[in-house]
Image 1 (cartoon, rainbow, N blue to C red):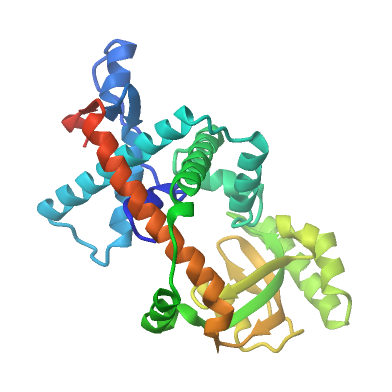
Image 2 (image 1 turned 60 degrees about the vertical axis):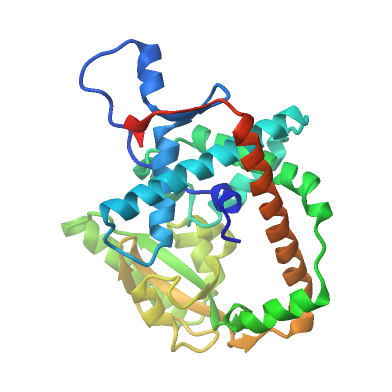
Length: 326
């Protein structure tokens, strides 16, 4: 699903910090200068352009970008955002509203990728994105998806030949890699030295001894862990290779289900990690994947139609581009 609009809908948290002009200018002029484009009167901010540019750069396999390639990607980023804005405006004209509960649910799903609320807030802060801004991004994304589903998805059909062809030509997509489910108990040590560090080490060692004596890992996590996952008995869910910190992966991959690691240290602190489940690598049969393949290909066709529609909209739209902000 790599087309422009679908890519633009992904929640991209990577945005650049706003660098304000050196000399004071009127507020209205400042706002205008901070936009890389205006579409039918609606601004596309430099933050949005930089975020989309960063997403596109990360999707490329190259590390160093020539001036020509960078210019090409900048143009692609801007085109993506203009198309997305045009579709969003059409969704508003079509009376599509987004319930606050739908936004809440989407944000809640996003937050599950973080160990706790503190880490989520820290990630937003490091990227200079407020939760209010993120909420707006989510709301607009839901509106655009809803519009595309209503206007184009129903017009798209997928044949058996197309589904089977996709399955045959994407074998790696239908390999389910080894997954492990882990729980942990965390004692934070961030920046600690001396007596505070010694206390943290004593605490995790005491918990390790309790685990060794057969006490419930779930109960110990709820009682002692300093991670938000303590509410779930320390459960962090399933992970594939490469999705965990290297020290954590090294500690758990050779464990048997039900075994607990020794004390593991990473940037968050000191951990005890238990392997609670293991799903071996397997190939997903066509019959099991058929429904998802059909839905995926329908979405691809819908996005292609939406892209063409957005192209037609742009021909009639008032689009002002600010080259200084590209």
